Image 1 (cartoon, rainbow, N blue to C red):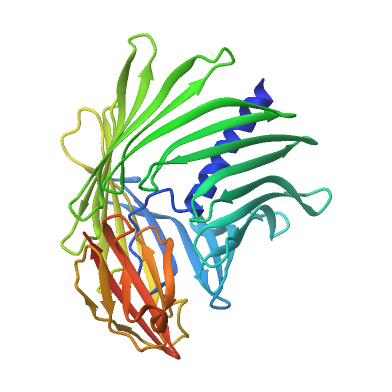
Image 2: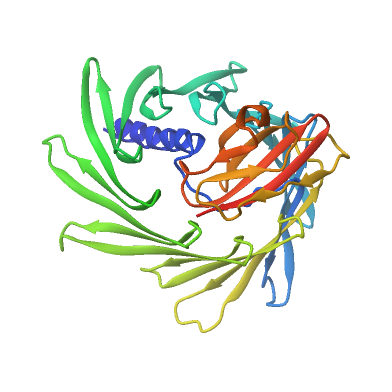
Length: 414
């Protein structure tokens, strides 16, 4: 029973990974035209309230426009100690192809592989056809395949099914998830199954309510071997007029009282440029709150991330740590040293078609705030126009290239 439970935890995490690749998960990151080269984090209040101590730093290098190497170090005993190495490769559309994680061995003073994640993009869009996860076999000095997820789509590009295989202790355990849509092509239900031989057994399902193209609420249920259905979790979302997530509430089901119990809330605030300026996460049962404030560079990159805590009974926020971000200006969409031009977009905001002031043969990419590629093409195919009406309200970034010249723009879809 323990192995089976671990398998379904693994499957849930893997399906979540694939959903991120397919754009189901939401985010509020700002897409910019710079590359992160260094990150430094300091903890505050130790040993005295006015002190700050470095705790971690990361260095990013870019061997090529499609490669990123992230090296992490931790501050210990007055000095910096290597911790890990994270290598990612992308295709020419900046879709993730492979991520390899390594941990530093202080004895051998070398990095040892631990995990590899491989993605096979689907055709020319931002969706994932399949994903593979590997773990490193230290004894055999080789990669062992530990899981595989295959996505099945219809002709409209909608995800219909994910087929999951986990390879544990020499055994193969299988599962699947089915996705259902309404007439507006919104994902309204997901069912998760275990598979034994030719028999598929429903283990859980989730129901989603979509309003104005945004996820308003979701409810998850577990299904017992006796086919009894029990609610397990619920989330409620609220959005700004621009379609950005403003509040999220998470609930758990109290089977004794047979009612929903609020366990956590997240509240987001945005500045006049629709950038995330503050996020407050509240633990209801512990009566604690964590606040993160975001500060930006003139190019809309996150410059500082400040984290505060408000404990039960406290009357003021306590600064816990700050993160500092440093960039170069060599975007992965252009060669080092070239400057991206700001493109004119009209109308902006828009509820439908927009016109881009670009050369006729320029290629373009449209990305949402999660960094997911949602549209691409060339101006000679689009007649200078892009139709945003199929997409939810919110902020979108447009990147374009014509020869050696690069362009960047931002539009609000109403």
